Length: 125
Ligand SMILES: [Zn+2]
Image 1 (cartoon, rainbow, N blue to C red):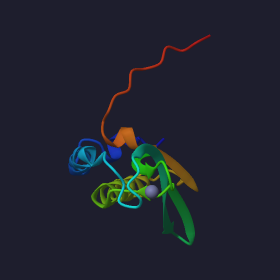
Image 2 (cartoon, rainbow, N blue to C red):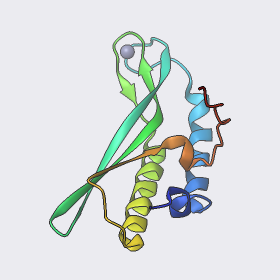
Image 3 (cartoon, protein in one colour):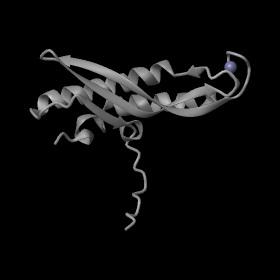
Image 4 (spheres, rainbow, N blue to C red):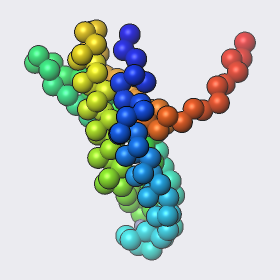
């Protein structure tokens, strides 16, 4: 099976995403749309790729974005999204090169792109 971590972790894209995330933090401030505070939400972006008359959609889950509490306006960071898209590109290229069967859909968690190791949950039962 395709190893996601071999696909894009540790490369320049991870650095790019880290920088974009760091730049994102100080933006926790009032919204441009109506002046209300914004809250962090985690959204999914989908990137469709075509190959051999077929399509593979890569969903990147858990992307941080700002949402206005009042009017629901969502603001995403352009440079962050560019980095996320680049990571999705790399993941798809790695899929193509892997020689494995390419799934119609695949999900990648944003945190995996950051090489953030979440504490492993102790399996219950
Ligand atoms: Zn608003």
